[in-house]
Length: 463
Ligand SMILES: Cc1ncc(COP(=O)(O)O)c(C=O)c1O
Image (cartoon, rainbow, N blue to C red):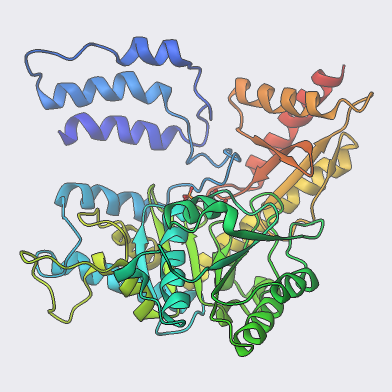
């Protein structure tokens, strides 16, 4: 099997620096390449995998290319890649400690290292989940548990019917995974109170204070470390002060930080000013598969309040081997059977060390600024956000204000050429291009080459 896999895998990884980022493919081509019908008789596994490599590899998008800047998609650190191969080979069900103590300990260490690296409260609990969405879900489940328990309601036992109301205070423009988590948790999107943000999509502390004055009882607030559009950070110190005051006024309060994009900034001394006060909050969600550059899928849910985290997630069954005193991964995440995805984090952190994690953060921010400077200097584009982290918002200029058309034409042009991949957004009602530098491999040469292509396509679009 490795003979079938290794050449394709090596060919793919070695091709990344020069490979087309987006394949020349569409639905019809993918169906034609892959739809061989469900066979009646079996086929040799190695043959199937060789066929898969032949048929599917040309259709794969190079998410791990240093020239992929769409959505917020990290690259693939070699240590994580190698660890993932082993994790697949070992095929462990990493829900409990007793059947698989080794990987449970690797995940425990990855959890401890992350909490240390991110300078979060040392007793924080950690769950390895599939991504930022499920990390937010996990943290908000713990939040719901804690704020309701504080008013005498056991939501785990009694559910939400008849429960005291929980008010969730969100930012206007909050990432859509947060309201989705509220749906999953029975809190409902409509229960949310929305607080205005400034032009960088940072919550306005005075507006939050105003909103909290109208809220009584169990309260959950969410803020962001790395906004998906602007890359901005909320003022965590101010939010922590307001939460403390709200709590002191008798309202059980929990503040969650969606750090899918940039929780890792807490590991970089150059970003200290942006994350001040982060460690005073209650829970944090982030992704391994974004800036840490682990393989998909890997998210991390971190809670200051271990008991609430565990109460929201843990599970018992007569046939399980529990209560050994060791960390059972299934106590900290919503899955039962699960992949040992924390092993990939263990490997990435061991290989990178503190310094290279810091380097990934600082370098991606530097590359984002290089994009912004190059585009500004061209007179063809404006940079809409303050580039404080790894996200850039670009307005392509056009003669008759037709910026949306030029934006889409530029993104489509570079994508079709295969040189890079960008995705767009609607920010304050305006169609813009986003640049998300999230790959450890992106370097100055990539940025120069892609800037050149962007400006070429902008010239074509406005000719
Ligand atoms: C701010 C923010 N939160 C949450 C998510 C969801 O993360 P995931 O796709 O890993 O579930 C994203 C994804 O880009 C994001 O940008």
